[in-house]
Image: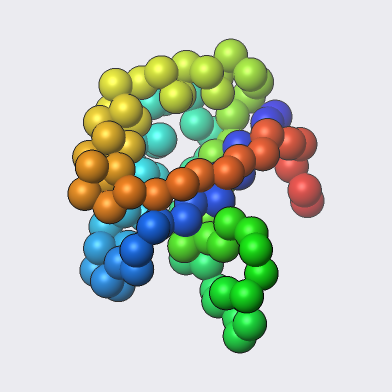
Length: 105
């Protein structure tokens, strides 16, 4: 089992409704690939002072569980995933950092 954890950071703040829609869209797209065994997407919980840290600060976290590296590659090759990413990037640019790892718990 591989967990693919993405830290998503939008360049500009989103409204609550827009962020909710992004989370729903990315979850649905990943589930629709048929390769994901689990998908969770949540808002980042900001804490005072984090804006002063010179690092990528998340807007949201997305975690996708897959069986193996092949399933992960298949998931990200799915046209629906590319469509969602492209649509959101064109309207609201964002950066992503990620890590592939064994389950933490």
